[in-house]
Length: 320
Image (cartoon, rainbow, N blue to C red; front, side, top):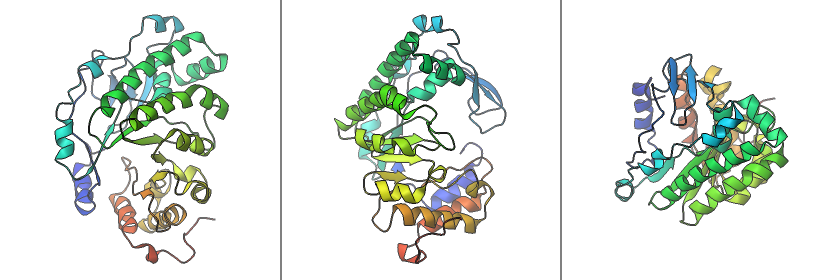
């Protein structure tokens, strides 16, 4: 995002500086990667997945998964060179020299990485049929991701983030039971590694993931960035307020993209009334899409910065 609208982003950050910082580090050089991400055309990521990008500033889609044949899994190797060649020598110094909460993102996204490697439709079939080769691939990825969690757990960062987009507009992409059988144990391992060294766990997932909120709380996720406006925000607040930190967000499908600044302010009031109520537990955050008007992003943080007693007596301007 900042590559394409850097001046606007800098102007917003001058008014509303981030509470989060990122330490100085780099991962090892990827052997398979080529091309430039988020630029029109195609690029190959560190895992060998070929991404096609139709418009500058968009991440694109994997159109050529490298493991289209199950037999290819037998000879596949994750990009361990990213971890083996990582330079984290300045991480602790960066953390010590900053008053900000130091948080890092990671490669860890098992469900999405499986989709990128196999293709979404094929992966869903693999999971439905319980293909043994897919179990082998999951174990392979899990080894990589556990090593990545251990690498960061050994540093002085405050928080570590991983992700997977699990929801459609209305429900999970697989059954909740399959999610609990296959993927929940993976996330539990990542949380346990990080928690054992006192790190805060940040998790992101788009779509309607209401069914797995209690599971994510149970395994130790501290802050959850989810697509709130795909779900019943008031119900989320009633059930989980005080049990997890809600990490944003504001509706980017409609309000941020097509609404007015007043629409945006109403959406912020709704989130705060449902999830905050003056007791904290909500991180001000929104996703700035390529075409999102800057005035709408400013409205998010202007409204979030207002004292709670400025909220309407009813708590929120909830849509009909």
